[in-house]
Image 1: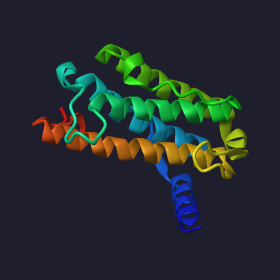
Image 2: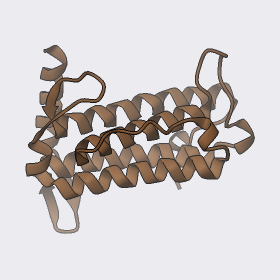
Image 3: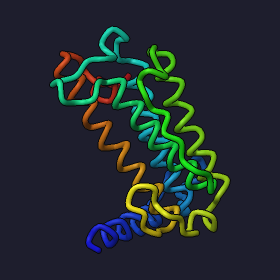
Image 4: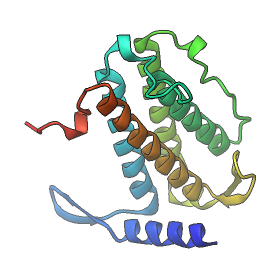
Length: 180
């Protein structure tokens, strides 16, 4: 209940957010707001995937953790689950490192997962995002918009974990570098 209230407050605040575009301020619809968040976290994870050295893709801060590549594959696989649910399809679990052996393969899969999710969000629009679906994880019924925000948050959590991977490996994440 508390989580649902927090999500509702988040969605309401995003609906009233304003973007400064060429023509001045523009209020975002719920679909536009979630798409903006989806694309932003996707951009950050893709930048990390492209930037992190391939010879460190199997790096783990401690043995019990997923490797850098496995974290990215998990995020991409979760995006695929969202996309399948949004399309009314049965989710397929295909995030195994054995299927994505190279950095190029991991990056391509991650990019595709964010592009496919963005396409579904755009195609559904505000009305479609308001329709209820059954969450693949909790099995609860919720609006597709809420599920999309859960996946944005999930990706953000993995972004945070990967920042730690960068730091432990002695590297600086792309978002923490001085902007040109």
